[in-house]
Image 1 (tube, rainbow, N blue to C red):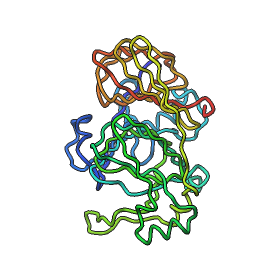
Image 2: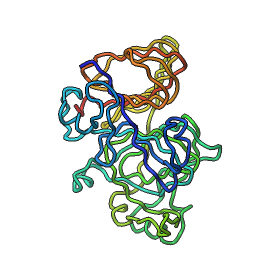
Image 3: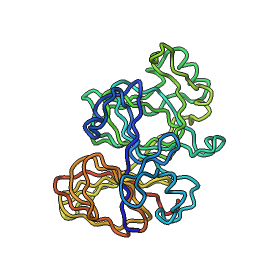
Image 4: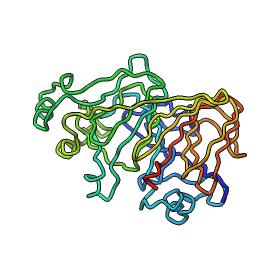
Length: 314
């Protein structure tokens, strides 16, 4: 089969949600849509195929019934999830479990990475902590000494951050990100700014599980971003890691690249054609392994983020 898989996004209400996702998805009518699951086979929000042979079927079912489209990889469930996250307000301070801890819930762990699509001038994230033990972390948190405990990182549009499982983190207000992650929906909230849900109740915290998931001392991330220019196109390697390889392509002219084993594409700007299909801003597309080459012909300057599995995960 030589068809691309175009996918419907799945929209999620969030108490901290904003309205910037409407610039990518004009069909959004509700307020406080905080997340668009652009490419998802997760049971909490699977994408639906928009075109071709599998039109109307969800990605989770296609993954199980047509493994040849995904290079017959051995993973029991689709391994990656791509989201856009739009934060008007701060997200909770949180942490995600690694594979070992998450396995008790029959889930992947949740290692993720963020490409910053937009950010207010004073935007910041929480990126790590200062505690050396669970006891110190709990004491600082319960004493309200958040400035001593949490490491704040100023950010700007175009920044990239890697967040391995076990790293305490939070998206700040006024930030729009593209997130590529393991396909997991396990989040442990450590602190939520005392805010209330619509029903007037505070959201649940998961301090015991969160501290079990947290790494001590805080993880230190070293990630080298590299870039080359070919045919006046900028090709950026954001990260190559055990769970995912992520690239950003800034395209002015025709671009061709091999497709191994299969590729998840999110178009964040521009329009044109890909393998003969028209694309536009906001599109989420899977290029299945039955297609051996990706060819993009931009009609306007195009920015696309590509995610692949490394060969060791095949």
